[in-house]
Image (tube, rainbow, N blue to C red):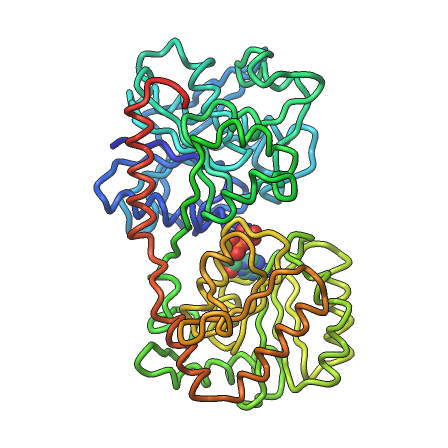
Length: 481
Ligand code: ADP
């Protein structure tokens, strides 16, 4: 199958969250199944083309892309995902992508990604690449299904092409003004335009198939509580909607070989984990106490992640329970400054690194005893799967992908891999953390639980095949279902 995969982020070139990991590991898994993939991504100023071995696609030259009344010139760089057959095309347009950050609040934010989508179609045209599937991801590339049906409908190259839109997070919808539809070459009535234009909603209405990244989230988004105002559209398209659990990159995230660790461990010998804990404590300036449970957090600091449930009792918990925390993240100012203040007050029990640090994320997974994700909603979540693989027992709210991957040890005795809670209230989270802290002292049972988590298979093997099945079902359909 020929597949066009378009995304605003992709590991190892540019990452702000889980979308980047999936945009790398899913195409790679599909290529390993024998499919032919072209991946399209903006060339942000943070990406070094030389470090990643990209070369200018001189055969394409400078391509003028028509955006409404304006012609925007782009260059294209060509390369591969590391050790993969996936071809990567970087869209070079300094005017749009040299902004110092991946996402902006600039007035032309939608234009930046409309350009990416036009560019993908132009490059496919230049190479006469006739994709079976266009796989778009989140609002930044959500117009591709509509552009396929309208803007580029004249081109027979795409006559058989079907579209798939993945929702990684419904909360970000790409709302802009209705004038942008013309820039994408779309007629105003496609998105039922009033004064505003929702790029994600347009994608949901026009994609042949819609996917989201866990079965539970696929059900949740049909309700008003999780649907972010799009539940009606999603209900209308529910026959086209599937939830497929993300896989993880089991090479990059392997405690036996992880390049970011000085010590390693695996299912047969977990002893190296304690050395990783010691390294982590030294790195984060905490006293190393093997018998004191260490809880890790690696996260964007956003309302979604549920830290408001932790804040009311964190200081009391640190005063009264034997527990340490290592926290890595950045985002909302009030969450950052709260954690900052706690780290000053409890400097021997709570360590904070503000910012983004890939290596430290791996060392926290390896060195923590437990990993906390109290998310209000979580489309899939990757960190809890990394945690399970690294023997860091997850404490999670039972929602979305967290509910699909973590089994509560008290709910299903003998099979549990972590601790879950449902009601989003601080005292319920506190009880759950305290339940975990109590269990930590039962060494034998704890080790068994850790090993059950480490054994779980979160590779792309099964999920990538499910994507192929759905692509095939879309190809068999003649129109939207
Ligand atoms: P989301 O996509 O909502 O941010 P996920 O759990 O799906 O959440 O994915 C988050 C990814 O980003 C994980 O790979 C995690 O390790 C990484 N990550 C998040 N914050 C940081 C950070 N501050 N430093 C390094 N990695 C981070």
